[in-house]
Image 1 (spheres, rainbow, N blue to C red):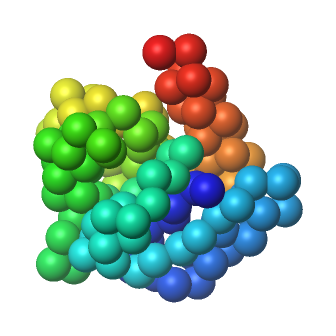
Image 2 (image 1 turned 120 degrees about the horizontal axis):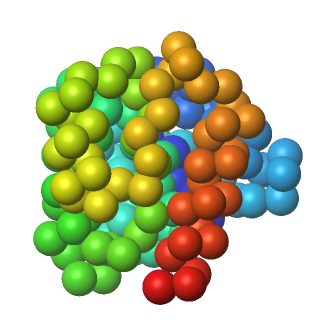
Length: 124
């Protein structure tokens, strides 16, 4: 299962449907808090995180994932509306597999990023 976390429900649902369309199980939630609740019970193959979310950003979720031994190795792709250099640097420091900016990357780029991240994780 690939967990999609985006406060824009339409984008999250679209990404989840796109993943299902290529044979992957995609599930979407609309907040970092909801993502962490899902992660308590499931260990997805990868997580796609929006950075710009209210209450808890994508980086906040990633930090918490990396502090949990059960979740620390899950590949994470940040798919965000912006690409602030300091956020990208922090995401890399935390081990995010990719940072994709919504305006510069299409759905195919997201699928490619997920595929690369999952293959890399499988090798490690």
